[in-house]
Image (cartoon, rainbow, N blue to C red; front, side, top):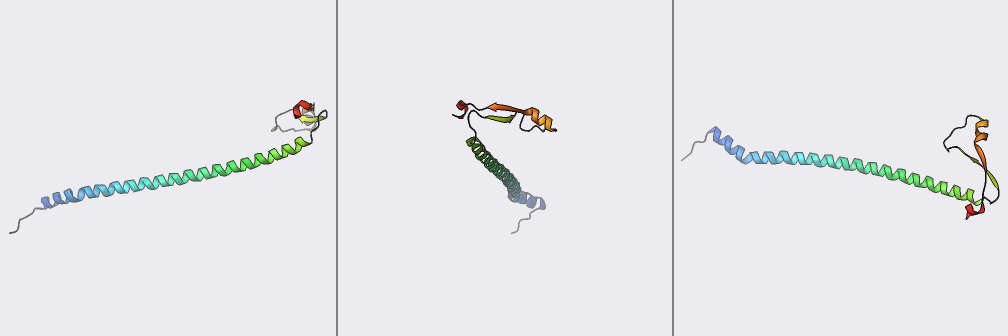
Length: 115
């Protein structure tokens, strides 16, 4: 004996069985999209960190070079001698020789400064 099934019953059964699967697939796609977005952000952050580390390494190399230069200059400083020193900030630009000469101040190195 065959039982008659209406279209409404078929739609209800389909919704009961496949509705949750369809919802789960949509949620899975959304989650996968979020994961891709997070991976992209992580890659961006790693790239930024790499750039920062690279800049830091360059800065350390420059600083090391300056320390070496300063050490070389310091080896030649003798107590009791007079040395010319610019009194302005290191970034100041002097437009004339007169300006430059007026910024130079003589200093005498004391033995106590050298240790």
